[in-house]
Amino acid sequence: MGKTIVQKIFQAHTSGDTPVEPERIIWLGLDVRTARDFAGANVVQNYRAHYGDTPVADQDRTFFTFDLVVPPNNIPYANNQQICRVWARAQDVKVYDVDAGIGSHVAIEEGLAYPGSTFVGTDSHLNILGAIGSFGQGMGDQDIAFAFKTGKTWFEVPPTMKVIVTGDLPAPCTARDLTLAVMGRLGSKGALGRAIEFYGPAIEALDLPGRITLASQVTEMGGIIGFIPPSEEILAYARQRSGRADFIDIVADPDAVYVETVEIDVTGLEPLIACPPNPANVVPVREVAGKRIDSVFLGSCTNGRFEDFAAVAEIVKGQRIASWVMASVVPATRTVFEQMLRSGVLATLFDAGFIISNPGCGGCASGHLGMTGVGQVNISTSNRNFPGKQGAGDTYLASPATAAWSALKGEITVPE
Amino acid sequence: MKETTIQGRLWVLTEPDGALYDDIDTDMIFHNRYLHITDVAQMGQYALDNLKGWEDFAKKAQPGDIVMAGRNFGSGSSRQQAVDCFQALGISAIVAESFGAIYKRNAINSGLPLVTFPNLTAIAAQFENGATLAINLETGEAVLNDETRFQADPLSQVQMDIYQAGNLFAYGKTVL
Image 1 (tube, rainbow over the protein chains, first blue to last red):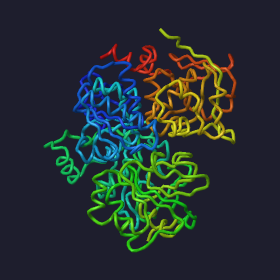
Image 2: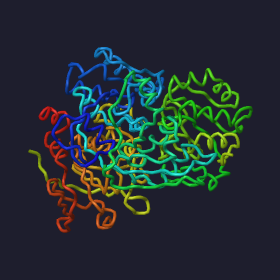
Image 3: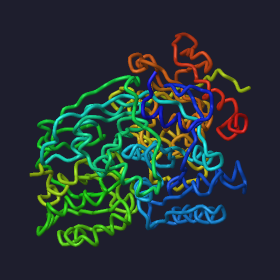
Image 4: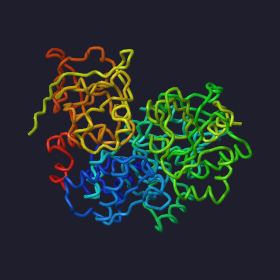
């Protein structure tokens, strides 16, 4: 019987006799294991409690990535980060510190993750690495402490579903609108416990930032991971970033078994938005157009790439955002920030009235920037709008283009 | 060997309209404003305090109680605290129609029994707060108030093995 992508990656990372078939539990070798500032100190605490001062399995495959409360705005987080730093020094483990940006994006830029690799950390959106064909997975602090020590984890092989997206994405729709269309169709449980493989012309046409956007929302579909088979362009990028000449074969076999196939046609798609209280509550932007907004957040692991901000700059160039709107921009990484700085995108956004933050997760997880108050209406390019997630207000999730147009008009606006 | 039948007082997590709650995410279980906490004993007091209608759950819960919810319980983030907070309160099991994947792992690794109850939503009206539920983790047989029998899924092998070992770390030492 043929193998799906997740089965191929798992097969290459397990030494046991257990067949790599859905619902079987295997021991999975982990190429890279990480912890971030959320849960990092808990990982250290678990590690110390169970393994004392003994060394990690491989310090060159173990990292911390601080991305949530960066720099820390309260003493407990400052303490937790310092606990990780001190422990990392003693273990000779590298820390991507508070200046680096979102760990999953750093992993792609630095080539720590690459097609066919396995990568775990304390970020539930680490499955974003499916954008380059890497098995990324978020885990809790016990799992990660165990992975630091053993380089392995037990894992139940997930069944795979296929999502085929056909048609040409029409202007002004972006990868985010495509993603919202998939999100709306599958809902919060449509991929529960499954891997997804994305195919179709509309998927093949996505660039790396677009692939990241789509892969990042698989968590909210309940999925383990969503793989987008790497294009030649993605493979070339990953070779260059990782310094590896080649990767394992991760093309699904023709006779691989899928539990479900869903087809979505994006021909004629219009811009979409996810209304409170959850990311699956997707409607056309026009249905809520005209609703007055108070704030805008551009960034997060879903839409925090340079191309996302460049698109916003194109829209707002020479204009000012509405006087009552508080709008913030948070680049995903230091590399993205630098691209914005050197290209002039940053100046354009600054002149338009945006608050420019240092890289990180920003307002997405009530980290260090932009909490919402009771009654506040917020448009965000992040991936979650659950009640209380970014504060007490109501968060709408939309594309950078929809957010930019809405910032200019001061109300939810269909991009032109 | 640990006891494989669990019996406890039931908390049925329902929405204000009475429907069994689906999609309870980790921010509703243990909000991100408490994520700096590393001491498990401090986590119990915040359990479910961002879930509408259940803000005072931690004050009402007693050791041994069982929590019941609908589909996709524990969706969202990877935070272990969303499991730890229930363990700090002494919750003996969580029963739901389905669980978020990362949450399920975290609970299994902590040795907190999660029991999957297929089609729970359809029969949810039979379960009331304060009822007594007994669950055989090996067979999946569940008995409500010593009267009504239901069939849930038994724990998977790895789930049972880790439960019996106590936690992932103890289990790992037996198999690696």
